[in-house]
Image 1 (tube, rainbow, N blue to C red):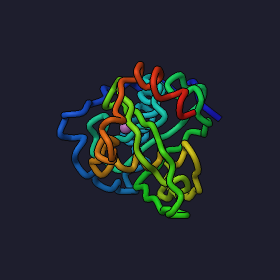
Image 2 (cartoon, rainbow, N blue to C red; image 1 turned 60 degrees about the vertical axis):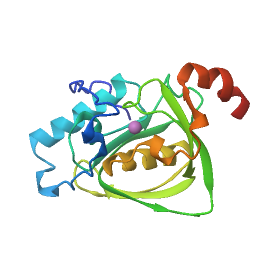
Image 3 (cartoon, rainbow, N blue to C red; image 1 turned 90 degrees about the horizontal axis):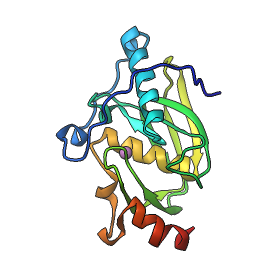
Length: 187
Ligand code: NI
């Protein structure tokens, strides 16, 4: 269930070129997770992602170098034709690739690289592990767009951006050009 009443603050999303996006984030001390400060930060991160129509956001994208990311896709105007998935908050995430040979082409955008899309390759099925916002163990098998978003967000926590994983810069496009020249051809 999506809590639309959630009233976090909208935080500033930092952009490509900000050195913080290139740092490896620190693990969260689970003993601090229940603090008001951490719980409020998680609410703020959710509100920020929703405000910007992101399908995911990592703490480092608001300049907080901690291993936390959030993902959700529900009636998202930036991704109208993608399968939706529920809100997931992950603390100290890790990803295991299942069926390593199965890769998918993925046109990705990023709130820290606004206006652009790029094509790269991701694993199509992964197992995401970590902790939820209450400190409970979390483990989920993800497929399709949800798996792609999890890989994109985990990369952020290691200072990696989608452009780093692109094999061919000919597949970097403004959203408008992506929709005009690539979207219909490939979907
Ligand atoms: Ni991103």
